[in-house]
Length: 598
Picture 1: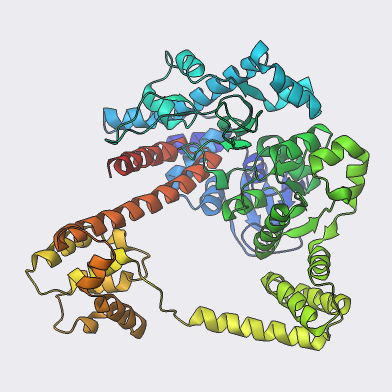
Picture 2: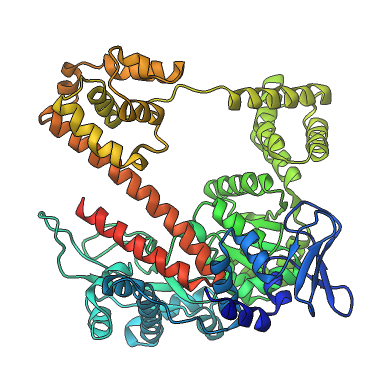
């Protein structure tokens, strides 16, 4: 990337605004802003940004540089990628991108078209909500207390009971490839692997758009109005978009686009479970609310949330699934050193119903009275094991110990343990001793290598690789595996594959094993006889079995790379790095084609 373009971007970029997307800054002088350093843990701000000279410096750890250095370190990107990301954030037009081929240019444009078709579908659903057919949908929303203002704010719509109407309206503007890749449409697969005509995925449902951090629609959740279809079959209450090049459910937080400013301003996030909970609370006036959209909280969502605040109040549904989701969310947030509180609403109500029945003031009181998560977990232990017997106390202690161990801070762990011991009637010395033993066992377990089980696919290939040189079965395995070592990356038998593929076949196969665990693994694979193969239902010649096993490995490798690309693509989008997004899109579409061909 040309130096003069980078210099132009640097001159036009506001470093305070860009750093402020990652760090909460406060004015600390005529030219300076300060905050907690993102490069090391600290409780008092020592990180400073100079608005005039456009640089940052941490007086605690010594990190410093310009706006490009900051983005490079925060997002782990190269200098050209950082320049592009800052240019997008600053509104500086990027140089025209060159494509290596017409195919690459076409695939790079697919993502833009997917954005456009989601916007088109949103407008279609919004218009359909005003149609006569949607009368029941409007009644449902009115009954849930959803106002016209709320419908407009969240772009709620209605998918009519039609397979073809939306397809026919959008078809003049989008290719079938785009319509199929969007996840808004689906098609029946024929016996020969081909697909029939596409049709609308969402029908006779209220639609809730899911938006990315920039407020662009990337997916939908749709709620059914009926419990059964025309043939009396039960229908799913909620239906979600599948994962697409735009949307990975574990990397999106519902309402983040609207809530992020208030999350920073109030320095905490209210995390609820479903869209209607989030919408009701937001429209009642609490704007720093986000939702997991009914999915399990993920590491990517925790990382996304940490950009805006490290303080979270959980208010999940009180049913068994909600309690389980709350506990798993607490686990993940604890490990990332979040400050966590939990709301338990009286009457077992969810946030949406509580706000409608009790009012926003009552909900605000519940929010102000949120418990520390340690108190919540101790109460859960007492509820699950109410007896005062020794056995009940042991069960309560075993329930709490994993949560206590996850706390990064030793003082907080001890405080939690002492509080739990007092409330459960357990000798505090015993509980603290258990903590020490558990920590020691965890260190030992991490250090010890486990003998992991291997799949039948791995076993087939290992048996082929130990055959003599020039054996056609061995050659069928060695060739592809030597060209594609990524296929066995991360496998339990990965070290064995590397040794057997890269080196000559040993006279004693077990001599190829790099350690005792691998030796045991190989011995188990070789112990399976051809009779066991027949009993397992394997068909085909040994070479055909090897070819089938190789295809399984390739598919696994492609799917893993696909997941990695979606994560990288989400990060590139968050940074506004259009150049990197384009490259990732091309590779992702190629992998999707390859999977369809397998």
